[in-house]
Amino acid sequence: MPRLYHRPPKYCLHKGTKQATVSINGKRVYLGPYGSKRSHQKYQELLKNWQSKRHEQKGSSGSESRSKAIADAITTATLREKRRQGHTISIDELALVYRRHAQEYYRKNGKVTREAGMIDEVIRLARKKHGRRPIEEFGPTDLCELRDKMIDDLDWSRQHINKQTPRLVGMFRWAVEKELCGPDVVVALKQVPGLKKGRSRARETAGVTVVQDTIVDATVPHLPEVVADMVRLQRLTGARPGEICTIRPADVDRSGSVWLYVPEEHKTEHHDKQRLIVIGPQGQAVLQPYLDRDAESYCFSPAESEQRRRLKVWENSKSSRKRKCRRLPKLSREYAACYNTATYRHAVQRVCKRLKIEKWSPNQLRHSAATEIRKKFGLEAAQVVCGHQSADVTQIYAERDLELAVRVAQEVG
Image (cartoon, rainbow, N blue to C red; front, top):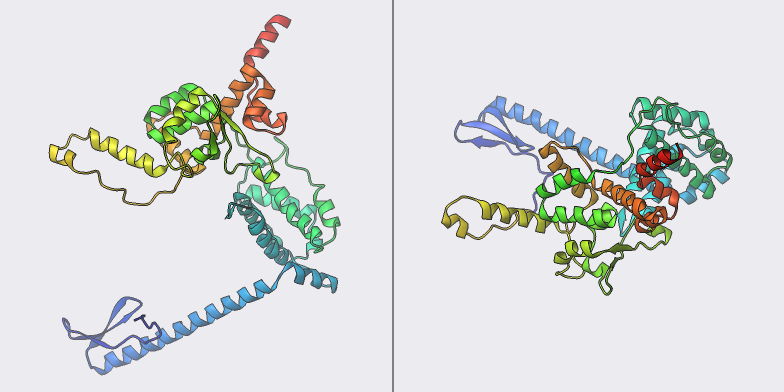
């Protein structure tokens, strides 16, 4: 039978001490000698206190449900009708409906993407400062003040601020699209330029650079076998970390001398672009042992990695023969079906910290591969392998060839 939480706590006898007790929220309270007048008075006081708190909880849950009902009643259509009747719409109301739109729009494979979280972050700041103001009153000066708060209160970097500001302007642009405000608001906000390097108080962050192969070679032998093979494959192909994490046998076409990997999901799929990753002989040798499994299963499994690690420790242990003959115990917890970019990065950086060497991330392997390809085959080849739509994007990944500049300087003078 279910526990009836609405029943009042009982007046009971504690046999060991012969005292009256009552249990409230799992805590035992002693009231004095059992059956005494003082114990009954104290019991009545605690009972009144319990009832008043219970009514407060009911009232708060009721107010929460009413607040939720009010919020659900605010939709894009109701706000549009409100504006047509001559009433103003507050930034709080706009943020409420835009946040719903972001949660529905920024989805991939049924999951809300990181972009929706970044939008929530900047909207929260705008609501805190200007939530009750009408949309039409928010102007460039207000946007600049918000950027100052991003610098002083949140310590955001200049690069992060320049990415978050357009997201906030995007909310007002969406409001224009839905006829919740006039276009003048967006036109005015777009006049605010991004923060320039060295001309703002915002801190600077170093961009992602290449990682030297000597550092990678020093790290790989100490990584778990599965993670080490992920690093090797990414370095050879120049793929993104997420593309390495989610590779499956079904996604790899092995009919030719060069294998073709078409990721199930990738960064630019919402632009209707196809991503094609070529895997040469060295990459094939790394990937081959992981293809002997179900076609829809992920090649690089955290559970398999942990099982291999435990087996290696078990085999190298110096315990008695009886302990070695015992069957290896099963994993004590469930693991994800595949690595993600965070767990992949943490596995690498955990080893770097233990070895006390320079920390690096798997994303730097992509930069290293792009730089090597550009050096040997040119910018266009690096653009094709990295899957960039524009060579300008490839310039970010492929570091400029210093040796070429030195050779030109030596010949030209």
